[in-house]
Image (cartoon, rainbow over all chains, first blue to last red; front, side, top):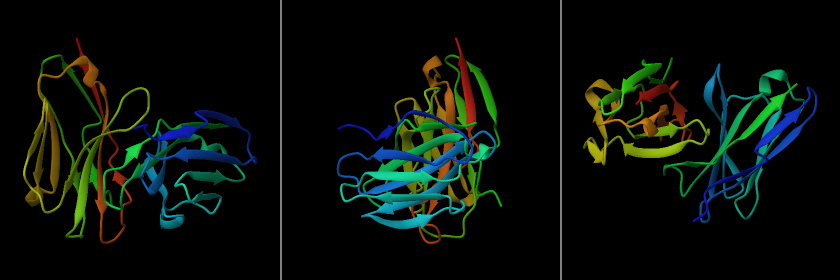
Length: 112
Length: 116
């Protein structure tokens, strides 16, 4: 079974721009979660989608948004990028709400 | 308040030594889940184990073992006869079923270096 895939793997943007990251979950997994990892804040939960509905949301500003499609693929969008948004963005998928989450390789976003 | 505490920021051992990574958690939920993940230099988080709050049995998987003690709110991870390939950052995580659903709250991680 293929694992979680994320595209692109690396991204460089400038302040004020917006960015869209994509995540394809493991086949059969309907739950997709997003996390941000930075050296200062560690791993922080962004949001979770299940059956195209946002089921849970972390403490991030409204510039961070996401969605899930009918095939369970998910995208997250960050608008009006700030320098502090530079991070590794990790996507995880799971079968159900409390099952183990399997992570993708991440998208490393650099904001200049 | 920190919900998951991994007090050891860095640990360095020599190959074949046993090493224990500590994890202390805090929750008011009666139903919760604990996890350990490994993050090698490549960056991808690798799932190691999931344990629910009603199952305090210790688990062993090859060289890995986990000790879950509700009385001390700890979920420690031991690697026996460590190998260089075990070098990575290890994260302990908590999911509180009643208050925050499947959201994982991670500890700050422990950087393990196994020297040949």
